[in-house]
Image 1: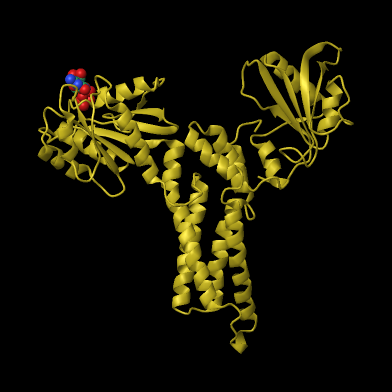
Image 2: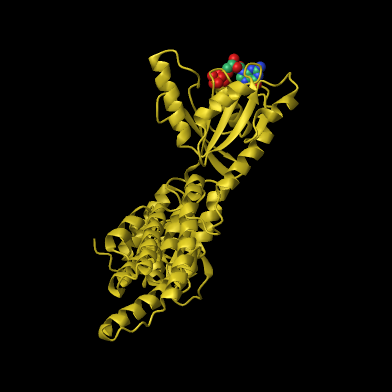
Length: 456
Ligand code: GDP
C-alpha cells in the first residue's frame, strides 16, 4: 500500500455512529474552507482561525438541512495541520448523512480509518508514538490507562528517545569515519565513552521494557485470580465486589471451562477477576485437571487473592496451599473469610510474607481493606520508569534495541572491529527510530492507522 500523503480534502463523522444530541463532522485539507462554504450560509474563506460560525446547511434545492455551528481552524493551527472545519449539527443520522453527501458532492472525499491522525503525523504535528497514544487514549476505559496514554500523547518518551538516538548516531558516524581511515589505525570514537553510553542506554531500556508488564496490565486489566479450597467463598467474594462497585456484569467465559472472568474498575484501575475451581487434593482424575488448571491460571496472573474458610483451615493448611501457588512476581493477598462472628486478630500471624485480611464476603465486611491492599499490589507492579510502555509495538522495538545494546557491549569487551560495532549500533538506532516514526515502512504505518476508526 502506498501511503504517499494525499492532499485532497477529506471528511468524516468524528463523533460516535448513531443518534446523539449533537454530531460533529470534520473536514480537513487544503480546500476545507472553500468546500464547506459551498454548503454553508456563510463564506468561511475570509474568517479568522479558531472562530465559530452559526448558519444553515442547504441542499441543491435550497432546502434547509440543519442549523449548525462551524468551527474554523486554519492550516498550521489545527490537529491535522491542514485547513479544518468542524461542523456541529443535530445528531440525527439523516442529517449526518445528508451533510456528508453534500460535502462529497462539493468535492470532499470520505476519510479512511485513522486518516486525520495520519495527516497530523505526516504534517509533523506529532510523532508516531504520540499518534498511537491517541488510539490508546480513545480506548482507555480506566483513569490509570487514561493517565498513561495522555502522558504519551504529550510527548512521553519521545524526547528521551530522540536524545539517546542522537548520541548513538554520533558514535556510529565516528566509527564509520574510522573505517575510512582503516589503514591508519585511528580511533575517533572513544570506546570508554561509548561503553558509558551503552550502559546508560541499557539501564533506560531495561526500565522501559520492564514497565510493559505494568502498562499492559493497566491497559487490559490487572489479572487477579481468586483461588482457594472449594466452598471457601470465592464466588461470594467476587459477587460482593461486583455489587459494591455496581458493576454492569458481563461474564466472559474463562480461558478454561472451569473459570469465570469479570472485568471491574476499582479506584481508577481496571481489574480482570478470574474465579477458579477450588484447589485441594484431588480425589479423581477430572477434579485433578480442574485443580491443575486453577494453578496454571495463577501462574499467568499479577495478583492472587487466596480465600480460605477461617472456621475450617489452620495456619498449616494455608501454608500447604500457598506452597503450590507461590511464584516470583506474584502479589498474594490472604483473605480469611466467614469471620463475621470471630475475633479477627488471630489471623494476623497466618503469614509472615503476605498481608492477611479478615473478611466476610457474605456480609461485605473487610472489602475496603481488601481494595486498599489491591491498590498497593498494583502500585508494586510499577517499575521505576517515569514513562510506562503500554503499546506492544513499542515494547518490541525497545526489547530489540536492548538486545542490540548487549551485543555492542559484548563487542566492546572483545574489542571487535569497528564495522561490526557500527552495524549493531545502526540496528539499535533503527529500532529506536521506528518508535517515533523517523524510520517506518508503509506496511507498518498502514497497519497502525488502520486500527483507528474512521473519523479519528
Ligand atoms: P466457592 O466454592 O469458594 O466459590 O464458595 P461459595 O462462594 O460458593 O460459598 C460457599 C458457601 O459459603 C456458600 O454457602 C456461601 O453462602 C458461604 N459463604 C460465603 N462467604 C461467606 C461468609 O462470609 N460468611 C458465611 N457465614 N458464609 C459464607
